[in-house]
Amino acid sequence: MKISRVLTLFILFCGLAASALAAGDPQDAEGSRDPALFNRMPHYHIYAYENKEFDRHEFETSPSKTESVEGSYNRVIYYPDDSIGGKLPSPVQIVRNYVNAVKAVGGKLLYEYEDGGSEIADMKVAKDGAETWVRVQAAANGIYEVNIIEKQVMEQAVKADANSLLSGIRASGKAAVYGIYFGTGSTVIKPGSEAALREIAKLLRLDPSLRLYVVGHTDNVGGYVANWKLSSGRAAAVVKALTGEYGIAPKRLKPAGVGPLCPADTNLTDAGRAKNRRVELVAM
Image (cartoon, rainbow, N blue to C red; front, side, top):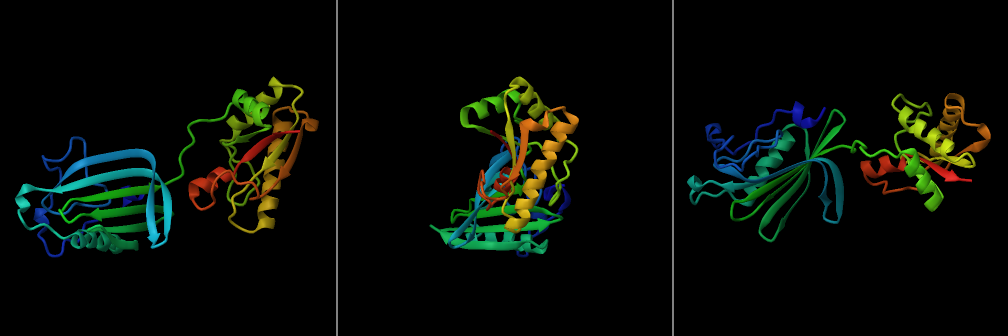
């Protein structure tokens, strides 16, 4: 369950009256709303709003390090109402409200800095195995922006079918297969993997002369030896399923494992590690 559905969080407004909070302001951009994680500063309306099911955002975690986080993305830009007059909150005041709110629910400030008169803070809330990453950027003119990523691995919508697998093998000698699922540290194929296994079997029937190495790959979490054994065991499990349940001749398949040695993407992010945990079909 996403953090935004289970957390009820109110900004600490430095003594300002709660009755001044704006919600559903008629000046708000059409279709916009406050992020579920936060209220807004008082006497503010939403000038621009963006929500995407899946996207990426860069967060600063130190003066010299950034982290690219992927997941559900929400961006809100707030403008002060005319009624605020000359009493604009400072950039530090705006950012500090959000930092305090994040800390109030067990989150933490990752890095805060000033850039060209704007105050910027990157934060993270981790709870129940889920992560919400937040950036707040406030300018001297009172305008501020909130970027939120509810971290997740994208649900794979595009699955490789037999024809595309065959095209990949003919073009490059190999094809990656996603959609064969294992538990953490396990070589047992999980339910939900049948569609991918059927496509591999179909691929082998499309080209009766084709013989394949079934190669298991892992991310780099854990030791090399353990990952090599894990990738080898998973490859063997796929071969066993294809020969035992889908009628493929054993002589056409040979399992192998390479552990973390051939990553398809970076191991520095969850999304990259998910891409690295795969099975590849390599022509003999």
